[in-house]
Length: 68
Picture 1 (spheres, rainbow, N blue to C red):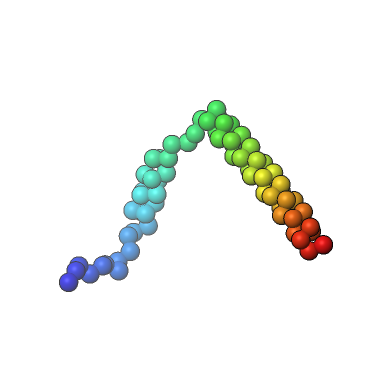
Picture 2 (picture 1 turned 30 degrees about the vertical axis):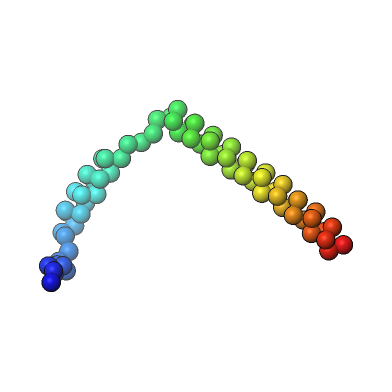
């Protein structure tokens, strides 16, 4: 059928070595990139919030006209 999975756990030293190796592969963004991306996220959040608020007001206005 297939190979059976081993239930043996890796020793803690191997786990820590693997963790350190993966951590060293991380590429951290520079200050300029981080600033640009943060500004983009804040502006898109504000834009989306305003769009949702406007839609909410329009729907609320429409419902008030229909309901009376």
